[in-house]
Image (cartoon, rainbow, N blue to C red; front, side, top):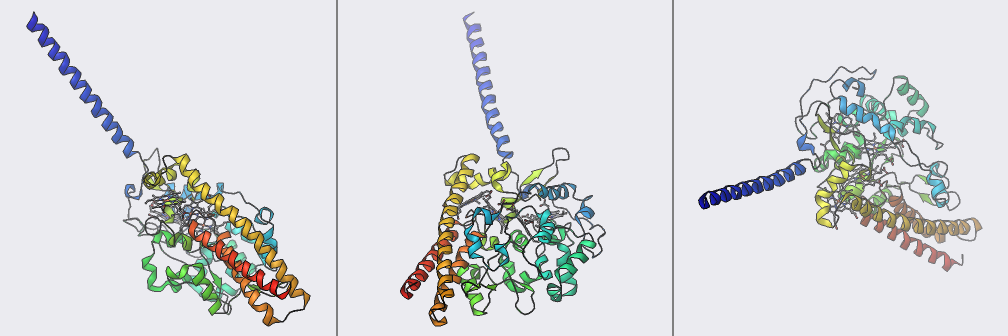
Length: 440
Ligand code: HEC
Ligand code: HEC
Ligand code: HEC
Ligand code: HEC
């Protein structure tokens, strides 16, 4: 009896141990499962070589609808950029801009950017004057194709004529051809199918182009600082390497070629307008060499029905997308952020700090501009006296603008944003002192 009881106890003990072990294994394997459901990455995508469909467009660009049978998920996600339709009126938000941009189109009409689907409607209805077709550079692959087929002469043709020609042929807004040429299907590994179709990027960077991640170049075709060549009116990029992408080096480049976007009547200053230097701030920032634009703006997602894994082509703020936010935590957990809410707060804090500084310095710049305009309009001073102050004003506006017009509000590179605002402020102070010395 005793022995039987002992054997029973042993069996029960063994069963308990086995259950405990199974339970632990269960936890471990459950942990494994959670680990696997952490964000998907491009390593999970099956890249395939496919035959390009026949182009149905008049100019030979293979359109999104041509690709839709082969890449239905990507084409649907690309169409969803239309949901990003909100526009903020910057001139209402920051009235000092109307003073600073006086005499230039942006003083009349300056709204925030929105989804890619609106590029053609927005460029057609802007109150900013656009005499030439070069305004279409960043709006549609059909303009890119026209330049690629017919050469730089297209840039200086009348806007209305080229716009009518393109839209008459069912132009697309930013689409497959822009970032992939006619080859979205010809890739067996990540980024192999990306192609720079905007010629001025290849022209400016030359061999240095290979040092930049193709997933950055794809977006940098438009999200950069550029200018129109004073003689040919062709779109040009002012820097030939990543080192030359700083606001300081770019300013020096424009100074060396004697370039200005407009002469401001009230101050007599020859002004520069910065565009949207996102490629520059990212390449000079803390994620450079580690992440490309797609990593933070194009989540890798899975179609629940077909299990197809792909890059969503709906370009979105990483702060509004759970998949992207979770991908940040892969590194930011080690940098003191523990969950997605804290990740949002971390970025918003940076943006709030930069925006507050921007408003303060923007208002100082407006005061400087008004004082310079008064000195200029008084007629009491010679150009030898005013030109050095005009130069300080032109330069202060450049550095301020480099921060203001960059769309991430400091999230891409807060140190660079801060440096721009500090430089602008010290140039403003210097200029105000010179004006004071004149007695203005
Ligand atoms: C052919 C030029 C072009 C290319 C290439 C391009 N963009 Fe854009 N992008 C634009 C324009 C123009 C707008 C503004 C559209 C408007 O407001 O009408 C814009 C707007 C955006 C917006 C919306 C901004 C907002 O404030 O709502 C995001 C996000 C964006 N782009 C990200 C990207 C990313 C990421 C890439 C690369 C994968 C990319 N873009 C490639 C031209 C381009
Ligand atoms: C604004 C630029 C841009 C446009 C427009 C664009 N793509 Fe992409 N595409 C990308 C980027 C960036 C990647 C991801 C590269 C990487 O791995 O980082 C990508 C990836 C892909 C891939 C590889 C598979 C995958 O999911 O990563 C395919 C296929 C593709 N795109 C097809 C298309 C098609 C079809 C269209 C038109 C509906 C299109 N793309 C429009 C930039 C673009
Ligand atoms: C490390 C992640 C990261 C990388 C890499 C990155 N971005 Fe961003 N980007 C952000 C964050 C964060 C914001 C701020 C979003 C917000 O305010 O909601 C932002 C904002 C933007 C905006 C304004 C969008 C909006 O909705 O207001 C544009 C346009 C943009 N990025 C383009 C780019 C381009 C082009 C590249 C590549 C050259 C790039 N980004 C690379 C994180 C990134
Ligand atoms: C591969 C690792 C990695 C990933 C993934 C990553 N980051 Fe970072 N991030 C860093 C590092 C490293 C820093 C620099 C930290 C420092 O200097 O204190 C940084 C800094 C930042 C900064 C401050 C930048 C500045 O100039 O002040 C922001 C904002 C940021 N990350 C946003 C994001 C967002 C949003 C995502 C996800 C969409 C993301 N990061 C994903 C590594 C990463």
